[in-house]
Image 1 (cartoon, rainbow, N blue to C red):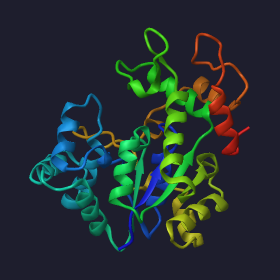
Image 2 (cartoon, one colour):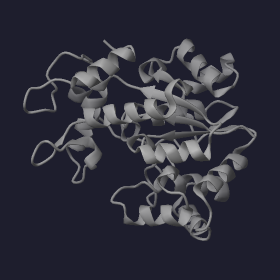
Image 3 (cartoon, rainbow, N blue to C red):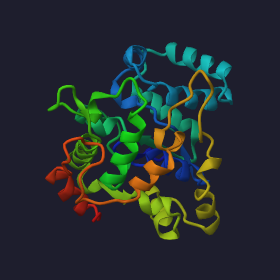
Length: 296
């Protein structure tokens, strides 16, 4: 059984979209975000989920419901919740091994935008899966920032990881998470995590899709590439049932208005940031990193 393929990215950088593309490949099985790297043991992870203000458990519940009970419906979600609660002594490594074995011979693909926020979580990933392959997914910081800031406008709770705490009250500034996540991935994996611009994948070109196949160790046949252009056909595409509706990134679930989308497309590293009231631009470290990633 091959080790899992992890798709690591900052928030709003297309991890769920790419998982959907990869999940359509006949030799791969992509799941929603599982958030398993937040703890060593399942009992501890479930307690974190219980105390959390967010829907971090949804992706894992949808996955267990689908694989163990054959559906993503409220009744199956309840059964999945009970299934997990009966195994508090399991390590999260064991749980992921169980999921990988359940989908074999297809290779498991795991998107993750939570672990890159925290070096400890990335170290847990490295320790548990030293042979796993990783794709480091990037998006232009302007586009990422416009989408994330638009999403936060109607949210009562915005994670502190998305804020500049030099302001009082703290100011939502997406470049904080963009810089931190990319730097953490680089520090943890270096060249072992292959960088891929999500913009090329979203364009649907053969080169970008074949590149993903190469990194995943699967065939880039015309039929496979055609399937990958239809991520809406992925088993986990869209919202889940009422008991676990999320598990995917908001950039594939939420509808953005035309003005926000048009602004996001005006990707630049030189203009004042539309989400900052002080008229400042990107931090120099963001600009330097973005240029290294091929963005101008």
